[in-house]
Length: 550
Image (cartoon, rainbow, N blue to C red):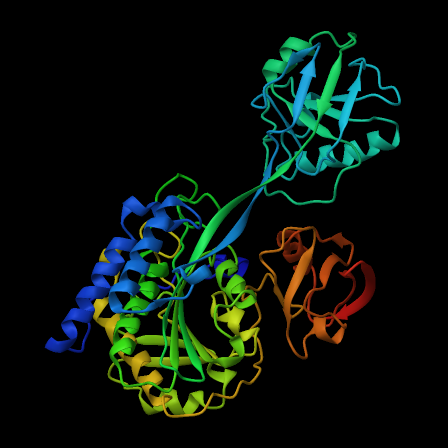
């Protein structure tokens, strides 16, 4: 399960893999053994946390596709393969940039352009100390770092960006930033940094370059600079298998295969965060993938032939539902024929004491009440329902296509998004009963017509008191531009009342420019219920101003 900002602020909910209260029948033992085999393999250190697009995830892809093949599924990815490829934006690469001082080439290890710099070339002979129009200027951070040493809120990035705009107005054609103080400036190339393009290139050089070329501030220096960026991308894969029963409608059953790798993309929690440990993600979400594999085995052999079955192991969920969104935009079956979608995310930690199983999407079809209650058994679970069709997992992508969904989840726990989410903490017997329950739900719908879809009231994305209001939007996490693009807008919420639609890009909220989801959330945190705020957004090439009332 991906980790949006609201999840980071939730308290830990502890659960333990005690032996499950209900006895497993002898005929069901092979399914339990298979679940354990799948989860142990997928959460092994050798797969290095299954980061989207990584070699470890490719090993997991092969494992799942081999399981699908053994079961007898048909490949239903791209070009009749098991895999559906899609690209993940990995930020900017500045290796095509070049810099020479006094005719000597500077290694890209010794300088970097700010990611918001424009791509252009500058060739001049400026004086380091003099600031004349039409040439590059130089900025030593020594003074500002010294005066701000005791200010924990000082933002060196913001300072440099602000001063570069001021220098550009005064005639600078580029800005070289360096640091002769003993204080660390904390500047490094941030490939995924977002922001409005600066008016001039801003280049940071290290102390070796500074010592060699900038020691004499009265000197004139030959400068030849080229700032050029390319986009870094990596390829990830959804794994897709199909049971063709010749039916008019198809049920999709999915779970995300990716996890956090070594923490390269963030989202890690706990004291080990950032220490390059392996995040194996046994519960999140090897447990869901294992359940999908076993449901595929069971449904392939079942007599439930009124539906076809499509099984998908998604990638990119932890990065913002990228794989499921890609699938719904590039489906390998006709989405209009899809009966409903079931999503399993973190189903391996059923707690013996409260037996709590959470099922989301309850309100996405009027039929769910009948089917879910007709096959439930209170001795296995205490079921808690959530009507909303959206949430921090892949069913949201299908709900956005007006498809009824169900989301199965056994709850957060103290190992969530930590290296300690390992296979030995899974409640395998408990997961088996969840698999059996889902199988029975599918069986109950077998002879019925295609389920009716209904829109639901969408849960507020923030549950923290820090965010007391919401616009009622679903951000598009795959958007790489400036601003927050809307993937969905909730009925009756402030954004819809203000006229916003899916596809719009919010660029300003109140006095705050919105460059990314992070500063959108920061801006949102300034308001309380009843407040009004001006809002700017783009619809295509048109910029629109409006007002929202929270």
